Amino acid sequence: MRVMILVKASNDSEAGALPSEELLTEMGKYNEELVKAGVLLAGEGLHPSAKGARVRFSGGKQTVIDGPFTETKELVAGFWLWQVASMDEAIEWVKRCPSDPGAEAEIEIRPVFEPDDFGPALTPELREAEQRLRAQSAAQQR
Image: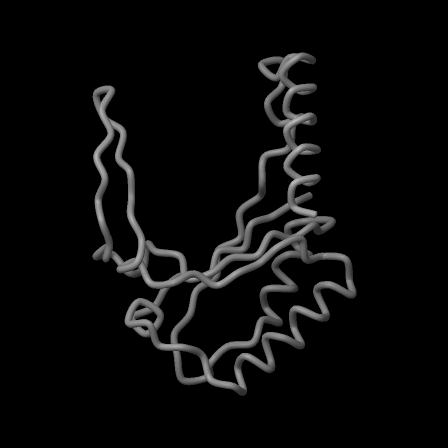
């Protein structure tokens, strides 16, 4: 199963504070472990919401809202995409994640939809189109 690991923002991350060299080193080692275990598919840190934007869709119209966004606890500061055998495995990996001992942190784990999750609504034609798009996207990334 694939899971998205969402590292929640903090006041420090929203202020643009960068992690220490020590924490970056620990995180690099952790990411190496994830790679060696065949778990890590992707992962990145995100700039503060002040550098971002949202697009709201309502009544057939789109509205652009520039950051920063006020609810820090609802924001994401980084993410990983992992391939794991179970939610329990994902939880065990997250529990090993390095963190700043003096800071509060929260990490959310969410399963990623797989094609079979959509049932009959994902027709063979739609499934084929999805596979074709994934292959094209992967080829462009090389």
